[in-house]
Length: 306
View 1: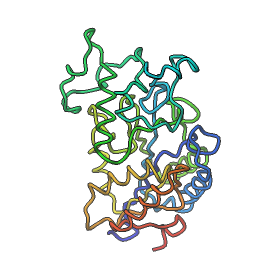
View 2 (view 1 turned 90 degrees about the horizontal axis):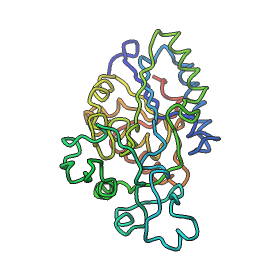
View 3 (view 1 turned 90 degrees about the vertical axis):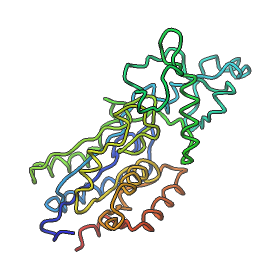
View 4 (view 1 turned 30 degrees about the vertical axis):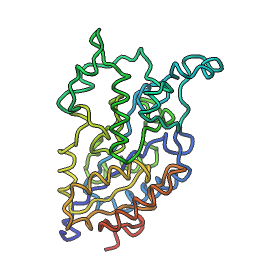
C-alpha cells in the first residue's frame, strides 16, 4: 500500500437512500445512526478520501420484486372470491418457480416490456422460446425460468419487497445528512461524486451494484469498468444499506474479483450499515465471511487511525 499521503482511498457508499431509513417504505430502524456516522467520517477526513462512489437502488413501480408485477393465479379460487382476481402478493411473500407453475402467482398480462430489456446472448437462451404469437415476451415462461435460476444459484429465492426507491420519488433520494456532507467534500477537495444506478431493469434484481442476480442484458452484466476502477484503489472503504443485502452482495462481488493477497486493502465499516429486520443472521454471516477472507472490519472512528 502507498504511504498515507499518496494513498488513493475510495469510499463506496451503497444505497444510502430515504426508503431504507425510518419513515421509508423499507426502513431499517438504525439507518439514521449509520448515516450520521457516514457523514461524520466524510466531514472529519475529507482530505483523506480521494474518491466517492455512491450506488443508488433504482426501481420502476412494476419491478419483478414488487407486488404490482404479480397477480393471483387462476387456481386461487377461494382467494379470488374473497379478494378479487387481481390480488397482489403481500410484501415479503416468497415466490418460487413451483408457485408459478401451480398457478398460485402469475405476472400480470398487460405488462409492457421495452425493446432491449432482454438480450439473447446475455440471457443465454433463445428468445423465441419466450416469445408469444404476437411477438411479445411470454412473461409466464420467463418468470418460471427466472425463479428457477435464482433457486439454482442457491443464494435466495424471489422475495417480494415493499415498493422502494422508485426513480424520481422522495424515497429514491440520498438521505440529506450524507448528501450534504458529500457536497461539502466536493467543494473542499474538488472531487466529483461518481453515481452508479442499479436495478432499473424490471425483469431482474440487482442486489450487487456490480451485476444483476440473473444478467439478462449488457447493463445487467458484470460492470467491468466500475470493478476495475475500484480495484485501482489503494484502499476501499465500504458502507451503506443494507448489511444483509446490497452491501453484502456488492462487496461479495468485489471480493470475488479482487487480488486475494490484497483483501486487507478493503475495509467494511461495521457501524455504518445495518441489516434488514429479520435478516440479521445473513448480515452477521456476511461479516464473518469477509473477515475470514481477510477483509478488515472496523468502526468508522478507527478507519483513519494510521
